[in-house]
Image (cartoon, rainbow, N blue to C red; front, side):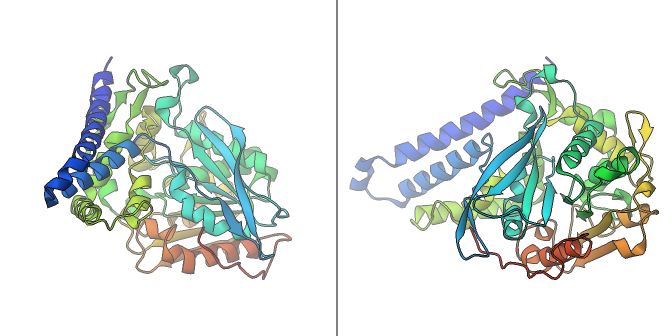
Length: 424
């Protein structure tokens, strides 16, 4: 029962706040208050709407929402999501574009398992679809996975990636965003020894902690000063009675969300104040910037305790990837064995989560790779999210990544014009 009551207490607090928001919205919206118009009622109704929506989003998995894309033929093509491999802790999905011939560029986006769903990469996927067939690792919420399915740590995660790469074939191009960058590098090295013919063609690592000690951030400082025992005591809980994964040890999504918000508390408080005032004035809308951002930001998922703890202990504290001593099932994975896969790193100069220097360390580890197959890019002025979403990604990084893929294609679309992005 250790931690289960705390887990259910957090869910109770979330549920209570959602109910309070709904109650305030309903009460302040009674027509009778029109007889005594007062700004308080509009403000209370606005607070209720924003509060109800915000706390409800925390337990809802967002939809991808990519309905169609513009094709080179001038027509809109319908997009559907297909599940190719369905495993207990994650699936391999494909964005099938109806009525379009298979693309020469094939890209696997390795999404982070760090508190948010893979839909965090929605805009990244939408920007790549006009120019490539896109696949994504869709990780599952640990609270919905029965204990009978067993454990899932960073070695299991690595082997999932190996299976996905084998399924997609050697002409696939990998883009790993943030947290999975070191494990994607390890999965590629694993294939280099175990099944060289199944290695991907290119590997692009975006803002990942390959060597956390290369540049200090608040994340690395926290990992350094807290012992594993303290960490387990503070953040690990058992899934409560409401979900299929009841009894599973997890790092709860709600606790992760509290940590995310605390890092920029003033910014978030200001954003919600502005939203409530806008709603009270009648200036809010269903798909305004606030709702679009926070519908995704507030939707969090639980991570298995063993995955979170092994990440901190082996990637951040033990530096197993940085020092090329990572093991899978007791066997060392030698990153120096990568000799044919072109590797590119992308960093943001203002990244406060994976600071410049952490990701580019991957190139140093690829001792068996010729310099002609290595590339790096530092995006001026870009923060962590900016290097895979927003204007920095769309205007600068995306074209460079596609060019890198083309330059290393055996018979790919070299020199092919990149299709302009159209909002969907």
